[in-house]
Image (cartoon, rainbow, N blue to C red; front, side, top):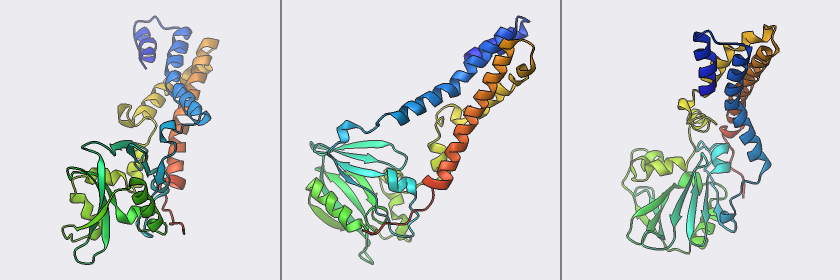
Length: 272
């Protein structure tokens, strides 16, 4: 972006611009989406499985039918039990590691129940001091067809005692967890609104608040007139501008289509 700014604006203002100036500006701008594309291709060509997670007991969501679970949540969120750690992978792919040993290590599981109906609402992972380290909402993790199997695998892998406790009665049993101290973590370990998920998983979400595709494409448009120049360096600049726009917009379109057609569509719970 800096190369584009210097060669396209500064040189032009000082009347020192030439066809080579535009080519260098276009080349600098093309590096932005071009490097994105190269990194994406490298990711797809390599095995991204973390070897440190091999051998873990994996607990995946088993959502209750009609709970609003999406394919993104079903395929991405997981709880992995390792000999010394618990690895939580949230719906957007973020990881949080919780120790199993030491003062802050998880030592017991507590099922939270509705005092009126007796239904299980969630499960807390607590450490030796009684502090809650993890909160999972039951209807998204253990209320589906594979819920019993998942719960049994979790209890067996942790080897921790299980107890039940009543939670404060809530007007809406489906949103009781929103007042919990770990509500933010529980929300990330649950289905996320499709629009928010698309926004937070954009390739360039952290770059200018996601404005990169618009800014880069706009800057590239200013170089398109060079396509009709009589000088070949200028025509190269115009061609690079076209490629810049195509790559930028194709990544945005692909991301939107993948979300709307696959990742953020409702998923039907599978039978055990």
